[in-house]
Structures are given as structure tokens and as C-alpha cells.
Length: 377
Image 1: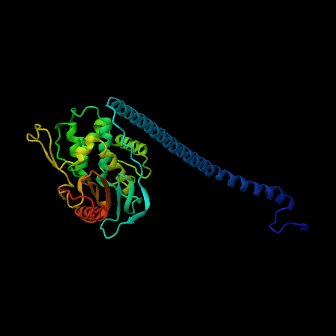
Image 2: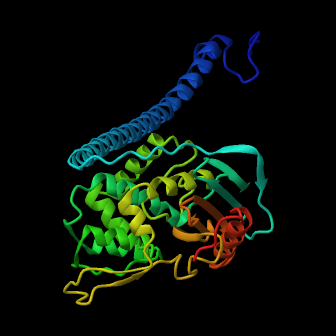
Image 3: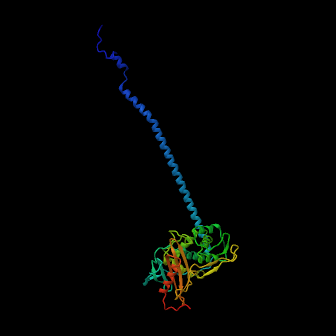
């Protein structure tokens, strides 16, 4: 048999083997196409997820933008409402007969101003209103929470914005319920009860009624928030730089504060208004008869129910306002008068116990009112 030269080992001719063997480059290109074709769906999924996430973020952003715009519109409307109430309150005040504006200046400390010690109250200041000097002080310029001493400013703003005290006010559930729920002291007015505005002054000053202060704020300004703005405007007009009010009753708020010195100035200012001098000097007062209270309400002063007024011996404590909250502790703004008419104002704050400010006041008046003054008959 003839010999076949150069035959491949598998028995096939070399030229046939080359004809059917796929090129290596073609094999590599086919694998790349398969990998790429598999990656396309994954890339599409990633793109779709990214697009969905962007749409969600856009929706959230749009919602937040809409909420901000709505809140801004709400604030604008609220501010416009407050401005209208303030304008209304200002209009009321123009109808009032002019009041001689008391001129109360900040008292001066002298070289002989003493430091108060041996008292329960953490803060105190005693001012001689005739010489307008500080006789003694203990943290007199420190920040305090005034509690119901706040009602002194409430009374001032009320008198300066109410034209006719023979006008009446009818109590509603919305006015009486909040101070009751807050645990504030109240005068005792009832839902549906219609009372003269004068009774609101006594209800504020004597039993320290938060129901009465809420009614005053509602009558004068339409809300307690707007009424507090009137209080702050008055404080600024009086030159008070460390006093700010949030409400008319003195319920605690971190942004509701004053100093002993400035509370003394507020008391002194109030006493220069004859109507308020009379109200703050009253021991007991009976409100007008109503359907809810046919015999009226007997209102008793929280200061005179704890002291007679003549305990200092050399002077008579003739006016004042107590205060208490947990944060403020017991406070007292009082005024004492000697037989010759010399007036002193005293503010004590942050004392433990209802009677602690009273005892402090008696001790301070005894010590710092000149003993040479003729004793009260």
C-alpha cells in the first residue's frame, strides 16, 4: 500500500481539518457579545431604579416646598390678623379720655445702697419713690419669673385700652377652661356669666384670677397672644429693657420674665393711675349680681388676707400683688406709705412658702424705713 505522507494523527487530511476549525478570534468575539447582551438588561434595571428614585426625591421635594409655602402663607395670614387686632386695640385706646402719663424712671443706686440679707427671698429690691433711689437690694437686676405679679402690667394695659368700664363681658367655655386646666388661680366666674368690666379688674387684682385676665385680653385684643404684644409695647414705652411677657396671667414660660427692679417700676406706674391705686388697695370686693351668682362673688386680696398692712409699725402696706408658680416660687410686689405720705415700693421674689414674702416685706420695711417717722395712729 502506498505510504501517505504528513497525515494528521486523527487520520483526517490536514487541509480538511483547517477548513472546519473556527478561527480563535471569532470564538473570543462571540463570548464578548454574550456577556454584553446579558449586561444590557441589568443596566436598564439600574437606570429604571435610578429614575424611580429621582422621581420619588422630586415628589418629596415638591411636597416639602408646598408645605413650606403653605406654612409661610399661614404665618403671613396670622401676622395680618394680629396686626388687625392691634389696630383695633389702638382704635379702642383713642376713644379713652387721656390719662396723665406717669413718669417713672429707673431708680439710682447710691453709695449707701445696702445689700439685703437675712431674708428668705433670693431676690429683692426696696425703692424710695420720693428720691427715686435704691435703699437696699439683693439681686435687684437679676432675671426672675414674675408669676402673677405680671397682672400689674395686665391692669395697666387694660385701663389704657378700655374706654367704658360700664361695658360688660360674657364668659365662654373657651375663656374659662384653659386657665382651669392649667391649674391657675381663678376668680370664679362661670360660663355664660355677663359681668361689668370693672369686676374684671378686681377679679384680676384681688384673687389673682386668670379667668379675669383671659377675659380682659379677649375683650381688648381678641386673644391673649396679641394682648401680650400690647404689654410688651407698654414695657418698651416705659423704658423696661429686661422684661418680656408671653401671657396676661403670669403662667410660667421661659420667655416670660422681668427683674425685681423693673417689676417695682411697674407697680409704681400702676399706683399713679387712680383707678388702679384703688383696686390694688382693696381688701375685699363683691362683684355685681348675676344669674350665675345672685349675690355676686366675694373677692379677697391675696396680700391683705396674709397681712393687715400695719405690721411694719412705721408705715402701712397699702397696695400690692402676690405671685406664685413652681418656677418663680413665692413673689410679692408691695407698696408702703408713712403717715406723711412718703411711699416705698418693694419687690421680693423666689421665696419658699406663702408667707415668706410677707415676713420678708415686714422685716425689710421695719429695717429700712426711717424709725424717726411718726408712728401710724
